[in-house]
Each structure stands twice: as C-alpha cells, then as structure tokens.
Length: 273
Image (tube, rainbow, N blue to C red; front, side, top):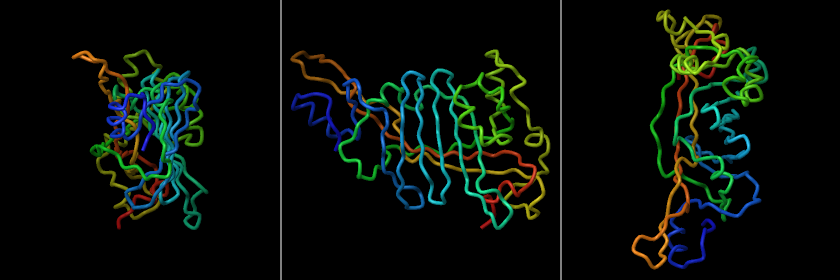
C-alpha cells in the first residue's frame, strides 16, 4: 500500500486503489527501488531515478542472465537511450562484457515527467510489483551507427551512457532523418547499408560461421515503469470539484533491436535453440 496525497477520508479510500501516489512535499530524494518479476520468473530490483534539473529519468535493473539494462529518457532533447552490458563468454573468446547502445526519439506520454517521478514513494518496498498494462513488443531496425564523440548534439547523456559501447551505438534511419531536419550535424551518423541493401545477410541465429557478418537481434523488456499520471477528483462541496494528481499507471513494454554486425562472434546470444 502506498502513501496518500490528502487527509480527506473519502479521498484516502480512493487513493488506496492507486499503485503509487505522488507526494507533493519538497526535499525528498529522487530514487525509487521497485521489486519486479521478470518474464523468466526471477525477481529483480529496478532502480528509478529522476533528475529534475536535467529533466531526465533513468531506470536500471539486472536480467536473470546477468545483463545490466539501463534506460534513460531525456525530455529536454526528446531522446531515449537503452544500454545493455552483456556478460561475455570467455571460453568462446569474448571479452568480459559487451556493451550495446540503442538511441531513438522519445515520444510524448511514453513515461511520466521527471518532476512527477521525483515525488513517487511507496510504503511497501518489499512487495513484487506487476504492471497494470502490458504493452506490445516494438520491433526496431537500427540501420545507422552513431559517432560517440559527436553525439552530444542528440543528448548530453549519451557520452556517459554509451562510452563503453564505442562502435556499437545504433539508431534508426527514420530518427536520423528527423534529427537532420532539426539541424543536427549529419557527420554524427553512418548509415549501415548492409542492413537495407544486402538482404542476403542471414540472421545471426541461423549463421553457423562465427566470423561471418549477419543481422543480430537483441531483446529486452522494461517490466515496470510509470507510463501515465492518474488524476482524482476531490469532494469540496461543489458539483464540479477539483482534480489533482494522485497516482500513476504502470506499464511493461518489450523491445527487439535488429542491427548489422560484422561477425556473429559479436552476437552469441542470438542462436537457434
């Protein structure tokens, strides 16, 4: 059960129906830790942080296989960033871990504002949360690479988020076109012609040779995040009453990123079962 926003008994009853509520007091920290169940049945802890000054939100958790997923929503630049730190298979010649970054446009109403996120509190942090809405899987073809040294034009978060990914920072062609129209320098991007002009490339899961180029797919799911604000109506003696923010709606959403790799060795998780 979560803390309420007002002392009115009737409103407290309504607020109990909300999964999370907004605390209007100033001065609280911006970190929220939420226990969620992954699709494989394991329970993990999500850490959600809001930065009101930079107008951004971050979400981080560890998958059952040890992969660390970080998501950042940059509201100022309308950019979202996904980073995956994947444990390498040392016995197969990989490094200790492999970093990937996927960048795309942030649409309005995908997630609640940073100032609202900063006020979220929960009374029972040990309860395992389930999202109220399970959104469909989004398929994204990442057909362009992003130059890390120049990516600050897109978002100031990219350098810190993606510095370990280096040559594995990807975005969509449609997003590139949008950013170019907004005046972003085209030298930031390199279109990967292999993705669109070489349909003969196989998916990595059906490629046997570890040193052959192929199309890799990486999937992740944000199991729980606040996607929408809820509003309650107070009973102030008038017929109309007043509305106020009293909680959030939680969502779960999956993403599949497809992108070109010069060798299957860089995509060992994508194998036929």
